[in-house]
Length: 268
Length: 96
Image (tube, rainbow over all chains, first blue to last red; front, side, top):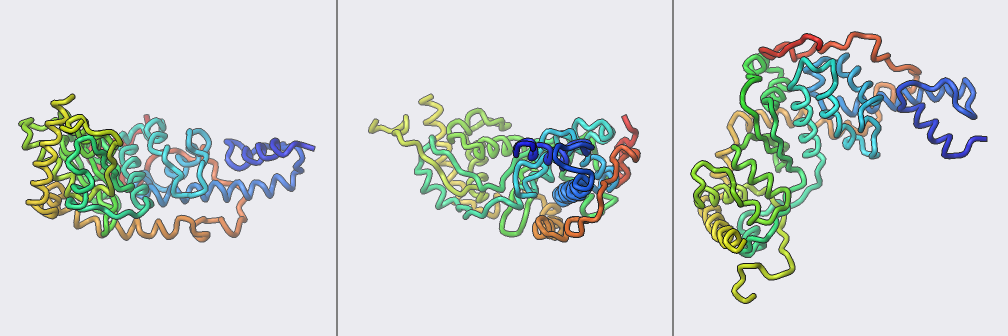
């Protein structure tokens, strides 16, 4: 009789492996037939999860191609096997998979659209938290440049080579004119994706604003986040204006201060 | 390091002053194009359904009936994108 571990490993191969095994120790042909029903159900559930998380990608390539790509993703891609019981957490590697999926090579923007859709999916399911206004935030920071801000969990900053936001919107709204107007050779886009009170927002930011938001959201201390921000004039007023913009956009839910006294504190 | 910190403190205080003075809405509107705002409401519906359906039994084609024993063989049909991608100007459809 096979050990429990062997049975479990064989079961896992039957459900999500590339080919359905024809021989599994301890299982007869009838059991394998029933297991293949389970296998098919399992895979179609994963396919549906990705359909729901990547609706624009599916519309771009059509249903058949999408299904074929997902089958290959399950069989080959790292991340094709779910590692969470929550289906909305499945598919984080799908964009990277598409980037190197030979049949999709003719659509170089496809993986950028997938990255955007994944960020939107993450934003949708991020936990709720109260976004602080600038008065509250300023009191938590207490004038200290070594404070670190805590971003709302829905926020994601993406720098994409293709105008994935325009493509995504046009595809989901079935706006053919907007699709035809997409300029694939335009310069890279820097996006901020977040969920606010009215839903998921996708907006473009200028390079300097995006860089500062990215650093602040990564939890860098303010003094490091502000260091050599690429602004045109480079004056302190410009940097301050950028920071003011970030602080008043209600993107943060708290601030963390280090335990030690700040280097600029006169009492130290 | 000391300079960087001092300069950051001063930037921070100017920024907070600016933010308090300007009010949140004016600054916010600057980096969100109106078109994006308008379309967000429509997209919300599309994505709103996802969340509800995601773990729904009915979402799977076979999930409850469990009748099909075989998925379509991914290699049995030609993998060629066929959807809206052809509507993008300059988007190539040639398999590479």
